[in-house]
Length: 336
Image (cartoon, rainbow, N blue to C red; front, side):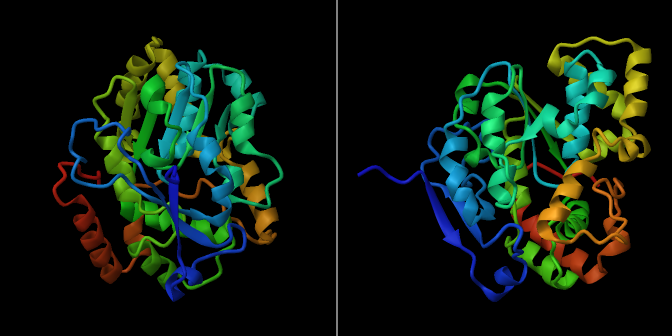
């Protein structure tokens, strides 16, 4: 008898139910059963199971299709945990890979230039099938995903297209994700409940840290570029140089300076073709949270260390302990 590809564990505790929202529906832990064909990278993760992921019941309808997606050598995948510089990385990499075509970038929204493959699985109320859209994309394709290594298409590890991963300090991720969950997914519960659920890996796309460690182990693979959100904030010029080398592109200093300005937070925040304002409007309509007085923007602060203003010292202490447990035995360190 053929073994099932995935195991789904319903999350039914009181705390788990408290952070579930109608937009996504009931949540489940998704585990890949046979992990023997996943890449080992530098071997730093051999003692640990690859990251599982909290998704929703509706994801079951897409899991096998995503797992068996045909992957091409000229694909470019942007993979991150949520609220870890995904949109920023997508815009940067798309422009570098497309001859800095700002005109085309302004005419075609980023959500169409770099499609979020699992979006329709996570938001049952969305009418389109984003996995099918990826299958129909004109090559070369740019594809975005928040899925962990184990749930991504298995051909990624044999075809070996380019993969760009961006990591972010969990303390800032949690802070940003809370606002995202509230304004985009329609979460109306207490902030403390959401924060506690993060510590128990009960929120969509968690746990973040094993997700990051799986890709950290692949950082030396020639088809993987591993970035840090904080590095992009503090030294974008150096990041652009690394990205150019990775993509095999060459641009003048003046061209890269213009790109750096284009990618600055203040410019990105007002760029409706790349700031996910269209996605925010869509999610608000689906989650019935379209409050005209709500001034929330998808690109909210984009700061390093913003958690110090929004998380209590007691919670930061708990989160530090949580991070420490997940990083035990690893050489990886999140940037502060």
